[in-house]
Length: 356
Picture 1 (cartoon, rainbow, N blue to C red):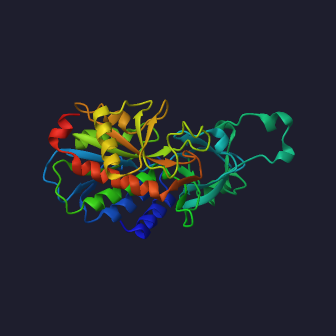
Picture 2 (tube, rainbow, N blue to C red):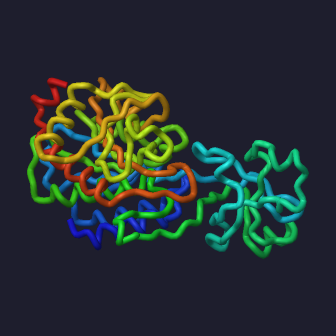
């Protein structure tokens, strides 16, 4: 795996605009990078399918990562030119105000700010109030509704994404940016497909980059019914807990390897498949964390109960401050996640899958 080329891909994916339902830019990047790896096609939801050229019609192992990011949508244009908006995905209101965003318009993406009232004008009650998204607006610099529409090109129903420049902090091998949930997973899936190139597998990987995970795992529903996999491996940008949990109980820490979750709010992981992955990690000396999650879910919530039932594991790449404008993730966790996924896929056979 060429590190420089992979970080360049992560940079491009992180900086891409890809609100749920508007993942086109991300899909174009992935389609270009996967060219030559096999048959590529899209569906109307903008799921992107990559069937490897070495595929011999063997049982399919769905290799999934979702392309969308938590974002917003323009709901209303106010008389003063500011924009009311709704969330696309799970936001905490306190993390939204005063942050820069990019608003899609008829003229392309333009900069905006989630407006915040200066403290000079706040009452004591306003200073201590719990913020609500319904009370927030986005300011693109317009001075009236007419100005926003005619001169800025603002339209109702357009997507809005965080505006965060990507950085590779080389001294610490950390990646800083937005949308690592789950663009870091998309890059990992590409790396796995590239690592498997030229290898004929008894259970073949089918790469699927799915849309609209953040708004109800919608793309995965279509993808699972299209691929009809015998098993599935999901990459996810998993929320790290090492900066607010007791170090003894933290289960998703940076630089300690990918996290394999046993349970979350949407799925009890197939224990036999999970144990195989953990055993392979131990055999190869790949650091792996284990999570028992009481909240959150992934595309696995639907995939594992699709068709006749599908054994699923989730390889989570720790992401600090997921579902905010600014995130950290570690490149070494990315490398270990890719190495684990490649090893698991190579080990799978129809008989082993049947035993799950």
